[in-house]
Image (cartoon, rainbow, N blue to C red):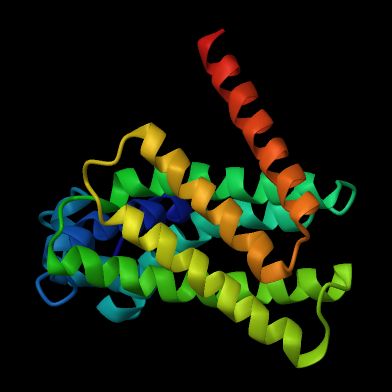
Length: 221
């Protein structure tokens, strides 16, 4: 078998095409042949597919991880910003969530089909698990919680945010303004779990509102 050059780009083409198929049709309805056809290898044998992936299940898991990674990359940037104040870090976190949600939503929202929901649920499970680890580490580093408390509250926080974002992703008629409203809900949820004082909450909301205004002004320039 002659393998085409640049296997990394070729593998990425398989992931992109397969993700769209899995979202639209669901795992069971997608065949290896369909994936080969989608990437333009309509005459290729299944051996081409198996060069890149050991099985269809492995490809599916890779697709889920890839979409989840896109969302999580923004969160990692926010969590790693130790040089910023607490309010600045939380604003950065929420803004990264909003950006990732908007970008990934365009990929995932092909309709309110069962296959679509199953893919989002699988992605949500992975995102929630990894986000909980980030929050737990964040609580340890900042001293907000320690020991088992950090893990418990991290799981609660990532699960709650996941539910808020998930519900938004299932709505096909969300406007940009409504997406901001969802992020407002996240900004209200996070300090409640962390245990912010009223003054700290007000500071966080002021910082978030300022960020939104600056972002909007930047878009209109």
